[in-house]
Image 1 (spheres, rainbow, N blue to C red):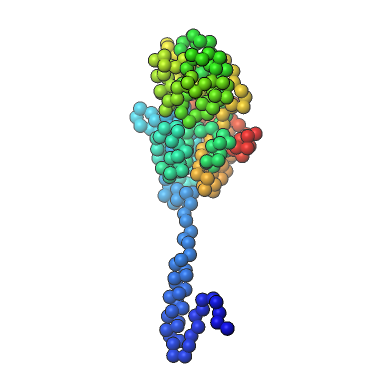
Image 2 (image 1 turned 90 degrees about the vertical axis):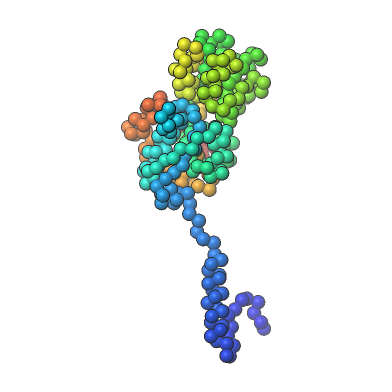
Amino acid sequence: MESKRTSCTSYPGTVRAAAVFCFALAGFALSALPASAETTLQRIQRTGEVRIGYANETPFAYTTPDGKVTGESPEIARKIFAKLGVKKVDGVLTEWGSLIPGLKAGRFDVIAAGMYITPDRCKQVAFADPQYQIQDTLLTLKGDPKNLHSYADVAKSPDTKLAVMAGAVEVGYAKDAGVKDDQLLQVPDTTAQLQAVRAHRADAAAGTALTMKGLATKDAGQVEAIPNFTDDPKHTGYGALAFRPEDTDLRDAVDKQLHAWLGTPDHLATVSPFGFDKSNITHKTAAEICSGQ
């Protein structure tokens, strides 16, 4: 009975031809096997270079006037990637709302912008464990003329405008507290938030306490950060580096280095210039936060 499998059967007088055919067939089969793709971790360790995506938001990630990319997250990235043998860290500036699309499109290898871990974002990226925890506050005109101390205060006053960074978690926090869409002024970055408050286009701006305090120092005579902001403890933000979902080996390698380094004197000295200290250290994991814990 004739076999249904491909075979290399030789017949009298055709042994040499059959052998040539079999070698050719074997070579074709080997060439058809998929090549082992180089992972992002393997590539950045081979080249010694990694690209980080960031958005201008002091003190998390920003560009200085002389063109240097710095901030809490880029400086942590430099330290951690150096421990992985990656010495060159290139920054790719983008708007906040374009960070995740840019990561997925391959414009950069990791988001280093102090991005909060949220269950929704966990569906799109692979987060490292958090490198800090922090809460929000408001930036208002000097003296807080509308007496705003919470998102709920904004919601109670329909004519009050709140400047929020497009794509940031504060958009959802405000809406959850009852703030209407027409009360929200969504802007691309924190500089635009400051400008909106100074120009009276917004009564307040919402963001992390460190960010709002930093903005207040740029125009202390006209604006201030609210010191006694009331917020839901569930809104505590946990910032982390973010990777493409397929780059879990890179994420895991980063986590290993982070766990050994966070809380050390070198870590605290690295983040101290940006206003971070021991109070910002957390033992929460990305898995816990992604699951809503």
